[in-house]
Image (cartoon, rainbow, N blue to C red; front, side, top):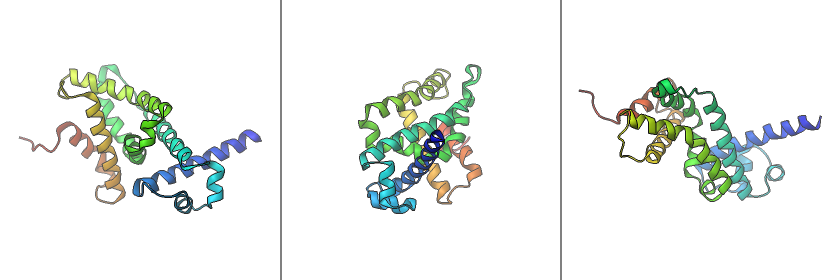
Length: 189
């Protein structure tokens, strides 16, 4: 029974972290009281899960890595066909734009060595594919692969935000990102 309680508490914490991520993207300086209100719980309940804002931010970093990592595990990395990895990745990660944004922009990720290491490990397969695609001529070889990765992260967040705001149709979002990522805004000949 104790294991079930731990699982239930973890599910509740994950739900709370997902809600907190949404608010903190809209209002990065939101107080713990505002986060509790947004989550529909009292501040005392919030403090049962996290002791401080600093701890909350660390949990948010690990939650983002966990969710993105689990999603990426479902994408096959086929050495024969690296070209399919990025489009599949884009389609899978657009709904996680809030998590991507958090990983790319929150200062707590950059100042916590454990989160930073986990984030770097998360990025490794993507960076590897980018490097292979550079060698195959899909991307310019002189552009730093980390820059390409950061552009991809930015596009994923922007697309998530635009879908959420109703400016881009959910069903066409992945194709738009893939086209933009590979071709920019260049008109076809």
